[in-house]
Image (cartoon, rainbow, N blue to C red; front, side, top):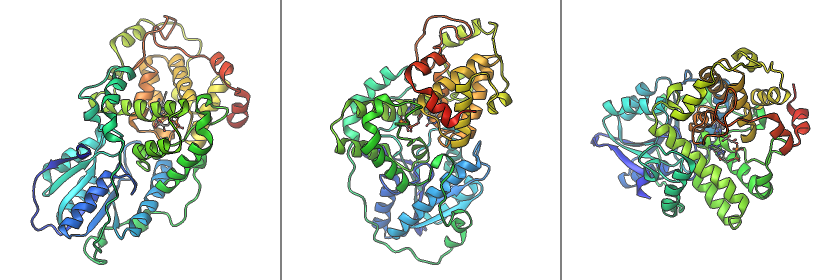
Length: 441
Ligand SMILES: Cc1cc2nc3c(=O)[nH]c(=O)nc-3n(C[C@H](O)[C@H](O)[C@H](O)COP(=O)(O)OP(=O)(O)OC[C@H]3O[C@@H](n4cnc5c(N)ncnc54)[C@H](O)[C@@H]3O)c2cc1C
């Protein structure tokens, strides 16, 4: 579909010698609309294509675990591009400086669409000074965010209605483009490449038994479709019938379109597939809608609805049986064995399933001095430890615990009308002993 690619700058560089695809959010070679368009342009212009990635070591909130996962994925990208005879270049340092420098001799640049403020601001600054044509590609969602809706949607229901009306036009993938130009092996662009300094030679399994990269993402997807998907409705912290694809989606190692296609090929859409697709498409893309249209998605006074702020405020002085500081929470020093276990799981593995994430965050709200402190603590821990942290779904998942995209419930202490959760629910639904055996503190 053409509306996945948009021209965002017109400034033909007649001296351009190559085509650039600045791969940042879509770290993969498969189902990548930006790469596909870049190959086509490069074939038409008969100019070599370079795929460039910029590594910034001081990237906001990024931890060693995030870099390790990402660099494993980039190793995989470099290898897969080499099979297509496309050169991959890794730059290191300031985005603006590096991307502008490498674009000086480019005739055309293609980049990935961003949704979060930091990434958008980098691109806005680059756009002011760049001197070539620029196209923006959107391939980390099934449907471009502005096609589904032009505004922040109120709930999953309002979003779903709009989404399903246009979905039919976005489920097909056209053939891959074949690159038919050899890049020159030695030129000035080669000297900028820092890949060898950063990309690991061998891959070692990371915490939580993760390995970064598009090949691993695909393997996980196939394993999930073959073995766990049919149990998806029974998923829980005790059985781990989840896809665990969120880190791969976060780094753009896999595309929702490819997941959709593989799922619909292997089975008719059963109840389990439908439930999975509700999460992957509706919930995930609703999260993108939230951060894209709400510029205060990460500021306490912008994350939820008026009714939720009012009800939380009116219960701010309610007596709290337990109050824990950020440090106590981070080191799992609460009275609640389930909560301590999920905090331990988060730190040890960089992952937690959806149900435990809700419980984890609701308890932070219950045990913090104020809802604002709770919100800030939850975002801090979420983004520090989860491989999939710092994502639109991070801000939306945490905001959901404060009423966003939810409705009012029966009023009670501390939470007011915001939905409450307790450990009885966990015990009723799951074999919590199994979970404690694995992650108990
Ligand atoms: C407090 C809280 C914090 C969260 N933090 C994050 C985060 O930092 N990063 C993140 O990616 N997700 C986050 N989520 C959403 C969700 O919990 C995770 O995406 C999901 O648990 C990831 O595991 P999975 O890949 O095995 O999911 P699966 O159940 O296998 O689902 C498949 C995919 O659907 C998407 N998805 C599933 N549930 C949701 C949801 N509720 N909202 C949006 N997308 C969803 C994810 O991309 C996921 O990979 C958070 C939710 C809550 C309540």
